Amino acid sequence: VRTALEAMAAVLGGTQSLHTNSFDEALALPTEDAVRIALRTQQVIAHETGAVNTIDPLGGSYYVEDLTNRLEAEAYDYFDRIEKLGGVIPAIKENFFQREIADASFRYQHEVEQKQRIIVGVNRYELEDEPEVETLRIDPSLEGKQIERVQALRGRRDAAAVEAALARLKQAAAREGDNLMPPLVEAAKAYVTLGEMCDALRDVWGTWTETPVF
Image 1 (cartoon, rainbow, N blue to C red):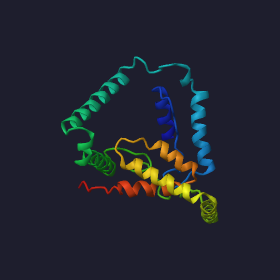
Image 2: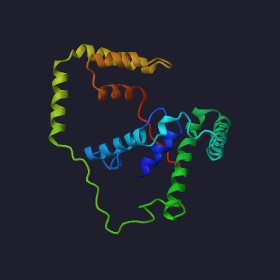
Image 3: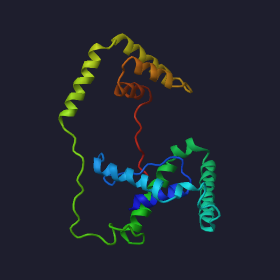
């Protein structure tokens, strides 16, 4: 229900692309039934509501215009704060974005726990014996089959071409401003795996470690 309302709001707002999450997507890969409900949600909006028959159905709404103006003002306020920090890179180094996200998450959770923000089914109108959501279960044997496929691929590909492609990828990553897409495409053509590409980039850039913001 909540996803349907959010999708309808997006359509009324003129979205150019829309994805409706399946109800079990926060728990696992969605089941076929969950995917079908998500798809039908979009189809009902498209074919039964008439919302798509008007270019701007909310045009002229004083409330929508007020929300838009407030959103714009708050966005520009963020831009000003980032500029005062010296730009995006210094803001990242000072953990500005991480702090803002953490603070917003804390405020949201506090409001939910104090019932200042009502989430139906979570802090109001809860079920005492709510049934568990049936999640998709993947056949464990698929992992073994995929490992075998990767091992077979590594056995028949040109090892020299792989090493050369990875070397060129590392060289490009080490040069500031280089476009990495050509060496990545070249590596894919040499049947370099995604994991091997990521390992090569980690060798150059290292692994980012989040700085605690509390």
